[in-house]
Length: 142
Image (cartoon, rainbow, N blue to C red; front, side, top):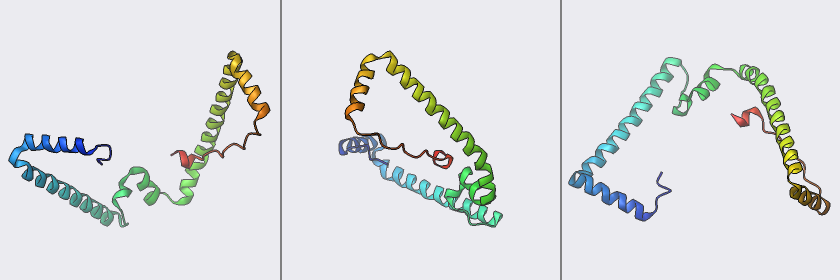
């Protein structure tokens, strides 16, 4: 959590907290820790109540709506039926974007003669280009 702070900054923050809260600082820290413990207990109780009401084992991570639907409401067949049309749309969109990108690169090469000259000298001395990387699926993008 405090990975981006160095020791001097942490020291300044502690000194500032001491100046603001004074001798009440230990009480403020204990109140903050008590609040965090209470929030954790409330979260555990809420997941326990949901598990009991729904009749399944629910973890705190499962409360994210996407994970909840995927784990508890949809079967694998239902999920695949939903993903199949979206995968096709994603593939079409990806192909269109790649085509537009290639066209823009071509236009940029025609406009800038120095880039075309560098490209022609680079391709004459360079090794063949490697195969393109496989396209990510719709699951990787979501």
